[in-house]
Image 1 (tube, one colour):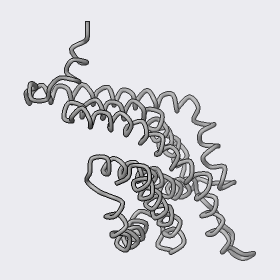
Image 2: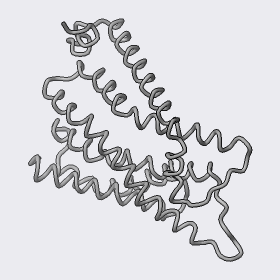
Image 3: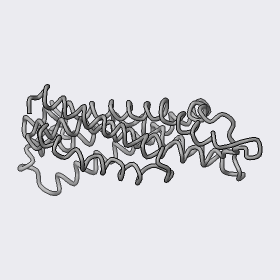
Length: 242
């Protein structure tokens, strides 16, 4: 026999009252929060390894305040916990939205949610292994024998997070455009016509979310946005024929 929660998840949204929706939202939020807490606890068990892995591109780091290292470890455990819990968080989000969509849209969402998670992880991996080392090399190259870098743990992690996380969201651009094309909201011809505006918006978005005001950091983010946009347009044209 199916549980009440499972039945509520796939029930006809027109048969569910506002109280039912609020109750379902509450249950899923509680499960999502519990998953995040468990993820943070697991992260805490491996916090030394996680911190060493994250800070490896920067080499030697320092903490400038007595409690700085402690709060950095807490921040890292929180972020890593949310990353570990991401599959559960994505599932709960998807399951709550399922009743509001048609059968065709269900099939799209069934691919969209896990695909979004995988692309987010791929984007953050690209940001960590490719963009972050290049960004550090560029900025640290301005030092000389009289000016030596003394990077604190806090400033490095803030810089790394602001440089890595945007790529997780940017890598979801093809999935969003493909879903919109499948629902006949956009077409390859329309995307081609908007190319000039997309170039401008890509650099504006990069300027808003990168941690510095230099053109190099903005370009490092804007170029992948434009490449993913063009790849999406080609897939929509030749794969979906739209």
